[in-house]
Image: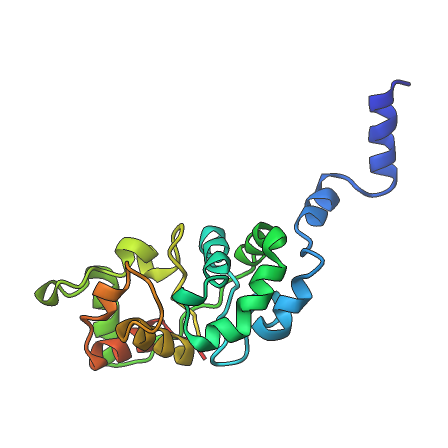
Length: 199
């Protein structure tokens, strides 16, 4: 019996066939519990002001961790909460990003009414009368996240509201979002929250 046959026999006999090996490859990085202590199990935060990570694009998560190491780009709250963690886990950032991106995303809880209808229009079409681009053009259809743009659908309503106002007031640095958020009215911000947010 050659080496390959012996190796295959050992894998089958110990139960580590393809399904088991695939499951092992999806296991969380060793330090993920430090993230889950604030962001919730599998990144599904229960704190209204702590963002959900589950189902976020891995590219966005990786870029966001890098941003959180820069004092000049962040709000005081984000810097205080994440600066040391982002530095400490820099070498594992890609593992964290990959793990949380594979977790089941929280769906949006659309509120009934005209405000949500306006939110849906802003996501799909934007507001041409005020030169506001459609959210979907960067964040994907339904704002479920695309590449380096985060998933907005299913994020905590309170967190979404805080971030949109921080971007409106330029407390959070993001050159792509400043021109967009800065043109939104208070009613439009509320409409987006009612359409995209979740409890």
